[in-house]
Amino acid sequence: MIPYGHQNIDDDDIKAVTDVLSSEWITQGPITPKFEELIADYCGAGFGVAVNSATSALHLACLSLDVGPGDYVWTSPNTFVASANCALYCGAKIDFVDIDPFTYNMSIEELERKLESADKEGKLPKVIIPVHFAGQSCDMKSIKRLAEIYEFKIIEDASHAIGGKYFGSVIGDCKYSDITVFSFHPVKIITTGEGGMAVTNNFDLADKMSRLRSHGITRDKKVMNNYNKEEQWYYEQIQLGFNYRMTDIQAALGISQFKRLHSFIDKRKELVSNYNDKLCELSVITPFVGDGIDPAWHLYVIKVLGERTHIFELMRKMGVGVNVHYIPVHFQPYYQKLGFKMGQFPEAENYYKQALSLPLFPGLLPEQQEHVIDSLERVI
Ligand SMILES: *Cc1c(COP(=O)(O)O)cnc(C)c1O
Image (cartoon, rainbow, N blue to C red):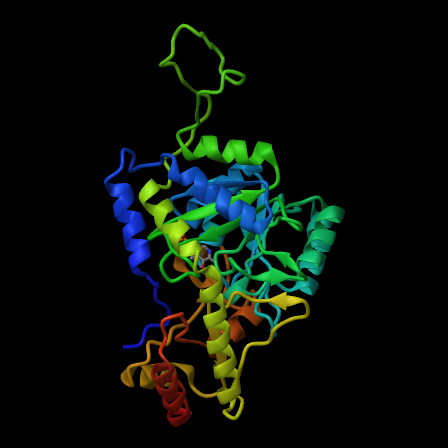
């Protein structure tokens, strides 16, 4: 079965990991800050905080922006559940903004409409989490403009989008947001096995996130309550944090993977343009790319016009590991119990009925891609 996504690991990656294994430190040590600096510098952000997953990064990002009980957080229904769960971890309420039928990202018209009515009811969100679906940036200029009017904070969920650009700005430079989060799960653009990072230009947010990553413990004498220079072992827990640390084993893999970021992106683009060329003759809808957007292409999603379940099954029978991204979050039983209803976000729901992700990863061979295209042609 040709999978829909797959990591790309070479000998240098393996050597980077084994070098750490035979070094002094294997948990968070000297390599993790190097990885943080590398990613932050690449994005043009001031600070990077590496953690054990993007889910943890989203949680810490919400906490650092003081999301808590009584607050509202809004995200897209067309995402992985983690983009919404992070608000619930903080005791906040979650809500969704329906998607744009062309980009499959958060719709600006819907956002505007929803903000107007939330304003009247006094239920404005504290934080909005736009998700750069498939690696294509949301309309961040509009979201930022609305943030200035309605005074909400922005966390970009860029789990799909490292290496992408938006009107010449690198995703992660936080030009239009407070914090940007990346995922390094194996199916994403670069991997650390499991791992994630939050980048920001705000020192205080970075400082809060790095303290919360490690139990809320500090050794910074400026913030300790009872600092005493005689007691060199002394540290203080000043708030309730977690163990969300990234290991140096993971960070070393990340540094090694990062060297191939651009070759990965180029390869993804080449595969995407080949799909676009070949599929335009079939009755499927290929991805639309908005103005000023240079996607990182985490996913290649088409919309099929026929019976999707049947097409899915036939493709799998032909050895093509197609997938579906995403089941709208509010369809999940857990979210239904929170009170969300079917039919509440119709664009995300219509999209979901037709969506099909085709295999896309740097190691996809030309003959494998041919097989995907041939199979689709036959099935449709
Ligand atoms: C993968 C993913 C996450 C979660 O990433 P992890 O590193 O697995 O925690 C969050 N949001 C989106 C959009 C994702 O695709």
